Length: 340
Image (tube, rainbow, N blue to C red; front, side):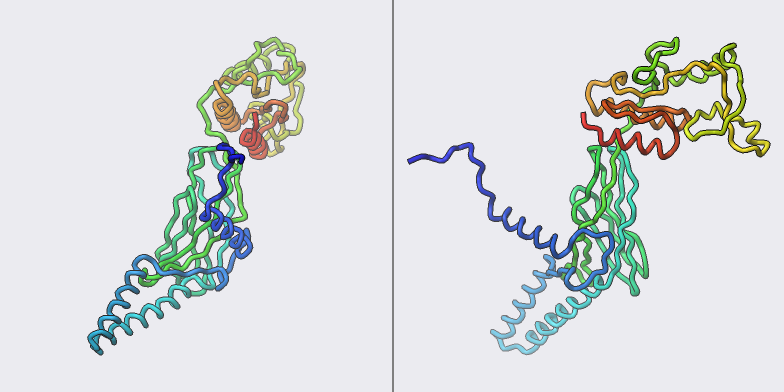
């Protein structure tokens, strides 16, 4: 008789199996969405721990009154039981009909707080609303007359896409004896950029470009001085003006013509040497991938703040030199989704 191998994968426990059934049932009943209006098939209600103690007390009073044939104790037991039944309706009504809308979530950085928020709309007041999510800090809303916002706070530890789990929205109103809740699957995800690490940005010539008489690395701190030297040299005399293109350095903008109301133009120089304008993965310091990505993220933010055009060479990916909000988003997105 052969014995089963000790390295065989153990079968899933009954609890894990039941949890899998529950998740599949919940996905079918409450599929991912961005807007909801809570109805009876989306709401669940159960007694809280205090509610279970309350029911135990009512049962004890009923048994005590029955045993001693005491009508006053029986009346008290029936009164408390009727109160519990009344609370069921009020607890359900506090969430029923509530309209929820998922608000856009802005991209963030590793280690920074990122908030996923819901806008609440109703035609009557709502009380004691709570929301929570796995691996996040939930918020509470004491009362909401007609509209409000409620959200959960994430502090991501990894870059890339952040997809939240199910949002648990519930309330113990009015007496804390019952908890009415719903489990919402948010059809949302947002990017988490690498954590910026302080570094002096260095721009290099692009792949296959000559260094144009400079070293392999060109620090951006010295770029203005080099630009002034280039403009002063005979080979880089002012040749005229050309329409301004988004992404060009602000040092080339013809501010005098702009102040005279002639529109945006940039200065064109004859024979101006081409300087390096690329952030290159191979030239970035760092012991591991995340450290290099942090340096490049900081460099992108610094260069955008200075208005310096830059390109990004990341492994086999190349982002042409440019500047502006759209260019920054493209660069940060590539850094967030980079796979080494």
